[in-house]
Structure formats: C-alpha cells, structure tokens
Image (cartoon, rainbow, N blue to C red; front, side, top):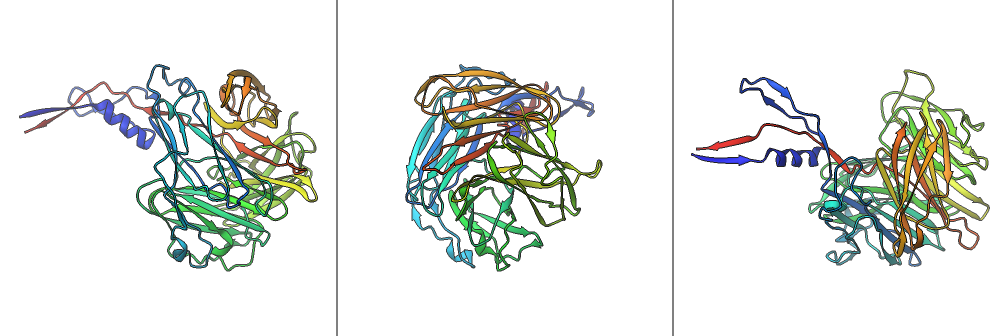
Length: 516
C-alpha cells in the first residue's frame, strides 16, 4: 500500500485563486461532524491579467503605455519586500480584425498579423512605473499577465493623443482585466458618432461574444444571429451602427456577454464635433451609484442610465460638491423604464466647482438596479472635447491610476456616506523622482478636487495610489488635461479596488490519500 500526502494548503490556495473565496469544514475527531475552519487569511494574488484595446486607427495618433505595481504588497497581506518580484508583460495580440458589416462572420479574418512574442512593455520592479510608446494606427491590442509580487495591484494606463481628424482628442483608459459580462450606457448609433466596441481575447482558444443594444424604446433589433467569434489572443473592433437596422439612437446601452471564455471589452467613441475618448464599462447594476470626477469647468454633462431588470427605476439625482450635497436645478430625478435607456441633459451642472454625481432610489425601499455613465464636455463652439465617466465602486483598500503628469492632473475624492480619510501616494517617476505620500480628509457628502502630490524631483510621469485609512467608502477619479492648439483635451479615469488580495481559508487538518 502506497501512502501519498497531499498539501491541503496548496489545494486551498489554488481554489481561492480561481474562485476568490472558499470555506472548508473538516470532520471532528473522525465522527463526521462538521467544524468551522479558522477565519480566512488574506493573501496576495499570485497572477493577474490585463487587456489593452488597439488604441486608434489614426495615422497621426501617439500612444503612451504606462505600467505600474505598488511597492510593499497589498495592505494587510503580510507581503514582504524580500519576496520574488516576478514579471509583468504586455504583448501584442496575435491578430486584429475589423467587424463593420451587416454580416460580421465574414469580416472576422485578420487584416494584419503581428509578432506576439516580443513584449511591448515589461515591468520588473514594484514601485517604479515603466513606459512604452506606439505611433500611428497600426498598434495592436495588447494581452498581458503579471506574476509574483508584481501581480497584486498591477495596472496599465493607455493614453492616446490624436491632434487632428475625425478621431481627434485625448483618449485615456485603464486597461481592463478579462470578464464575461459588461454594460456600457452612453454609447450611440447616430451618424455623427462612430462607436466601436473593442473585444480582446487573452486565451488560447476562440470565444463567441453576444452584443445587445438597448435604446430609449427598448432592445434594438440586431443582425447578429450567431454572435461574434474573437480568435485566440486577438482583438476585434465592432462598429455598433452596423449591428442594427433600427433608426439611429442618440443614447444606447451596450450589453456584452460571452458564451464561452472571457474577453476584455471597452467602447471607443468618436464624435465629429466633440472629439473622442474611451467609454469603460459601468459598475455592476445597483440601486445606488456614484459617478466621480466631473471637472469644474464642464460645459455640458449628460447622464445615461439603463435598468436591466423587470422593474422600472426612479432615481434621485444629487451632486456632491466641495461644500455638500445639492440637487441640480436641471434635473432632480430620472425615471428609467425596464429594458430601456433613459437620459437627461444636466448642462453645466458643476457651475465652476468640481463634483460627483450621486444616484439613489427616489423612494426608500424601492431600490432597482441600474447601470449609468456620464458624457462630459469641456469647451465651447469648435473647441470642445469629450470624456466619459462610468459609475464606479469605491476604492476599497487600495486603487491606482498610472500616467499622471506634473501639470494638468486633478484628483477627485468623493465620500457619499460618512466622512472618510485616505492616503494618497505619488510613486517614483518613470525617469526619476522620489515617492511622496499625503493624507486627505473628505467630509461626508462632498467631493474634494485637488492637484495631487507630485514626486520630489519628478522626471517623466508617475502613478497615484489611493488607500482607505478610516471612515466611509471613498470613490475617486483622475482628470488628465493637456490643451492642444486651443482644444481643451482631457480624459477621466476612475479608480477601482485593485483586489490585490484574496481570502484563503486556513485549516488545521492534513489530508492523506491512501493508494492500494
């Protein structure tokens, strides 16, 4: 008889890495009675993935990628600086296709092949960001993975500047982890807009993606009957207006789901008059939402919301300003019918003071889950520029946004509930500089918009990491502004909890398998 010992700790760690949470019970004294395991420990994740879409189809586009992992490990994880750093790399996708026809199955063939073995960007040291550049319209989607001490909190920012043409503007995006379900309120199929949903498959097998469109009158009839196939380790942009024969709609909600596998998904919007930017996915449907970081000088703000359930939603609209929570004169509430997209023009709702939008149930006890996003415009006349702010969750224990500049960067912190305190760390620069940390207190119901701390002796760009210290939840966003020949170019990125740790149950009992 052979006696094979199995490592319970290894098995549990593997389970937690896949599911994010697990519970173990073990027989007590061999009697078959379940006993609760000890409270789960929080350990750093050992691997993470990020996907960056193809940045632009403009030949005059200039793109900068900035990759960063915070130093010291996740808060409360017990990680030490002596652990192996690991590696984080972003590589080109194997191929890129372009779906713009009524029959997307015929348009899935790659239009160009790229070498996918050589990394575009490689990070080897926590605490110091690294950058890479790509010019023109041939830059492919990127597929990336991080391991070891570089995995917890790994983030990559993709910033593209297009100085002229139909896609002009400053486009910013925090590259996203793969998932299976995405909501994008705020898209459009009108003639002056060219909105593409970019799908990136990180895995070694093809996946099939379904795209549903919902306008003010409900579902838009789609010409997709068998979904869109995204080849292995490839990126595919899909022009939304070609997916439906329904009349053009100014406000559309896009729902992306996978039948198998997982993808990265994000919408790139280009408006002939307002410029272009990325529209990231909204936070998961919820009864209350926060949309942080509306710039003080916003000249137009449009709220778009969608109710995916069976019930209508009545939302109370409030603005968390620097001095408190107020009800905008332009709109006090919004009624969202089930399965339909609703929108309201909030005009210059901030009136010269930065703020964040708070959506709550109009009647207590009647919380209906919704998704939402803002279209924000700065400037007037021919000198206007657009950005999007999706509903986002709180920063949690820690969240990071990379590619901040010494000038033109604004950090917005919003405490929708109780007052809160956060610690903000400016990392070393990509080309030099010493990290700086500063603590901020955010009063209840307000938005604090400040120039963030800048590393001493900064050279290049840097990352901003926000950590919760005490009090209620905090939602955060970063505005990056870079005027160009009279155009108020800007982009807004929200902070999302980096989920740098995972709960791993502890167990006292060893498992032994007896083989005859």
